[in-house]
Image (tube, rainbow, N blue to C red; front, side):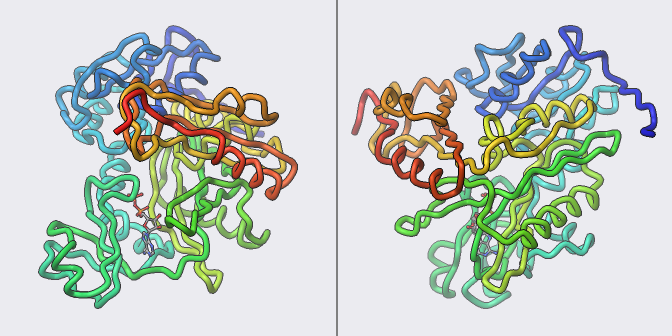
Length: 391
Ligand code: ADP
């Protein structure tokens, strides 16, 4: 028999006031799920053009790192969450002290904002992650020899703030002169991600492992594939590792655990993200409970949903602005794409396109990995995000 559990929050519905820091595509897809339960989401974002702006009951334009602005936005809310980790921890702590339910906890956000603290925490919990050293400035860049992966401790995202330095000369020419993590390069076979939800009542739910499939020509992630092409043992080890991170942290909310599988079959945690994640977008059509609904369930301390897949395979392809795309977005080939079965298009509501800007994504579901991969190739050539004013 499970124990009775009483959430401190009002019942789900219009009386419940939920705020989110960040109004981009992750917040937007969370709002789409929140609408199903008539939960009205309030949003704060620095951009007047935020993707969520027209979907929210209250939009506040302010700097997410400004503690006073976060407190002013959050006062009177029942609960507040984030769709980005670069927010004021102090502001959120003040809201927690006033009785607002803050998920994830401010201390976890503080830990995750600093890649150095993250690495130290992995060590203290006995979680395998690449050997490293912390340095204060570029002078110390040789501390671990070369080649080395240099990561800014704070402020990096989407690979910005991470670089491989091959020699001392390379470090002098390109290295970051700031507090950094120096990390031994892992001989990566596959990059994997596991999303785990944990609610305040201690329930956990783990999604199947997702694989980032790289385009070898440009060495960039081409698409994400679920299930990952790994053995059943590796799948179960990766899920156990992600769950271990979440329980060691005593985390509440949704945590994406990024990891590497090396060429000897070893698993290493790279880093974690305390929110919905690009590697979980396929769960909207691919799994019983999407990561966005699951995030809401965890934040509102509701029973967690079923993470099981609805299809044998799913893939997710980001829609990125072409290298010469500027102006109003033009989604070339969209009509033809919409004739394909099992293809789902999501546009993020961004009114201008820029080169390489994430404008949306497409999910493909199918009977096996090979057929889904064939559809991904087809989509690659069919669909392009261009602009009304190319270079
Ligand atoms: P971000 O937080 O900006 O996403 P990551 O820490 O995830 O940055 O690093 C970006 C990419 O750099 C990873 O996806 C991986 O391809 C590569 N990378 C990071 N750390 C290592 C490492 N120790 N060894 C080899 N490659 C790495």
